[in-house]
Length: 148
Image 1 (tube, rainbow, N blue to C red):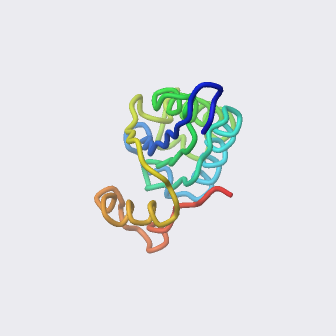
Image 2: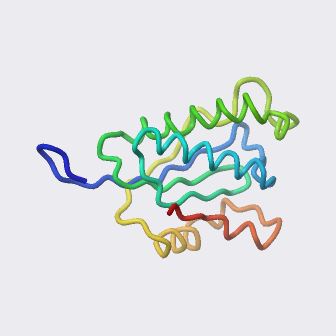
C-alpha cells in the first residue's frame, strides 16, 4: 500500500468468538449472513478481506492492506456492524443460544501476517487450528472462502 509519504503493508489474521462460545455457526444460514455483514463492513471501510472462515463458535478473518487501521479498529468495525445487523434482522436464527445484546465476545485475537493466499490459510488451518474445530461433519473443515 502506498500513501503520500509512506509505503507499507499491514496484513492481519483476526479471530472473533461468539458470545459464551455458543455454536451458532453450525447453521449455514447464520454463517453466510455473518460473513456477508463482515464483508460489507470491510468494503465500507476500505479493508481488503482475502479470506474468511468459520469454526462452529468463531470466525477467522484475514485482511490485507490495512495500513490505515489498527487491529483493534479492524476488529471493532467488523464485529460492531455484523453484531448489530445479525441481532436486528436475524435474531430468530440464534435466540435460543444467545440473549441480550451480545453476539461476539468483548475480545478478539489478532496476529500480523505476511502475504495471505489460499495456501497460507490452508496451512494455517491444518497446522494450528485443529484444536478449535468440533468435528460434526467433514464439510466443516473446509469453510474458508476467498474473496474475489
